[in-house]
Structure formats: structure tokens, C-alpha cells
Image (cartoon, rainbow, N blue to C red; front, top):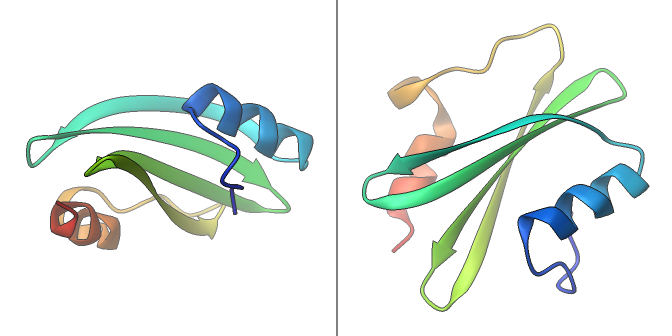
Length: 88
């Protein structure tokens, strides 16, 4: 979804906006000791949530997409939580 040339979250926002995504917000939180930045976008009736977190010397981006009229599950109900907690 995001090319390797994107090196930070500001670059990611610019890239996705250039692809027609509308940036609708972001938040930063701690997930099992790792700082995660969640960026939210909308496009074509879908909400796209991109979770950016450190993975060793690199950054990992996990993307979760749902229809715009649905609410994202939170905490343990969100399948992304298990993925984020498994990344060391």
C-alpha cells in the first residue's frame, strides 16, 4: 500500500492523499510497550486504518479496512491488536 520510499508518517499521509485517500485523523498510543501511530483515511466508502510501529530497526505498517458505516472494534476485539502485540 505504501512504497518503500515513504520514510515517515508525514510522507505516508502525503502519498495516500495523492492516491485519493482523505486523511481523517490520527492518534498515538502504547501497545504492549510499543508506541503505535494510527492514521485514519477514507476512500470509496471505506475507512482505512494504518498502524505504524517500530519493528527492530525498521517500521511496520499494518492496515485494517472496514466499510465507512461500521465502527472499528476496540482493544482485544480488534484483530490488529493481536498482530501488533506479536511484532517484536
